[in-house]
Length: 388
Image (cartoon, rainbow, N blue to C red):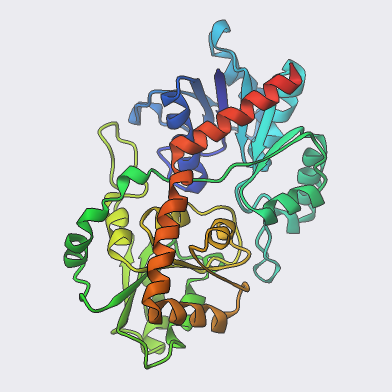
């Protein structure tokens, strides 16, 4: 099958949508498909991939739809896509939609986060802005195929106008082979974790929607009679949380791992999760996911692959798999006391922690990118068969 993945940002820039597009392209290529990624602003010479990368023109003086069309036109006639998969409703889905209508090439769109999710207290989400809301609803009303990564996302897609034939579950994932569980003790020693301490870890960039300040408050409210625990918060700009940690009296409990350098493979492609993060997760005991909204976080898939029980808010796009597989505890979004109580429950209850660990590892097998590529392939075939 010939597949074109359309995205608005791509490697070497690194983010959730960028890396999800790359990993899906890799896994689909390994399954024997001919994959092309269409994206603007590429420094193609910097990376080497087994799939094609074609740069589209990114200019306010040139139609983004025409830019994508010209990019696809660069493909040889026998490489024209059988199906196009856009990452994000807006702008990628919107800009490629007219081209797919004109050429009659089936299109499927995967919302990822702010293009469909909202959190009004922080004005998060495009649907809270009238102009974007109108464009997204109009697009959803015309699309025939959309994927979702959570039940909440599915409901939002329908509520905002989608009535096409194809609405399919397709989460983000991880590469489970990156996690070396038999090296757990060595990793704990490497990170200088006390053997008698239960380690809570969060991996996230520091922005308000990611809820790291709420996590610090939840840690502050943990009962004093708990078994020994420590917390690690790793990610870009987390050093800005230092004052909050100091004011919370947690300097001896919480360690920040800020702005970790990217680690690259032999083709100069960033490895996500990096070996450092994968090893950190394997060495840990509990994962904290305090994001207040958003799509299916790659870090949540990583945490499951590391076997970590997860405490997560119920508007986080990753919460369904935690809830459905009993791999952690889901609490109401923004409820700091509930989040703290859930952490305390898992810290206290060793048998529960072990059971959740087993459930996490079992569920992670379905989140390996190779399994997700197989799901995507089945979805593509379903759409092509129906259209044909």
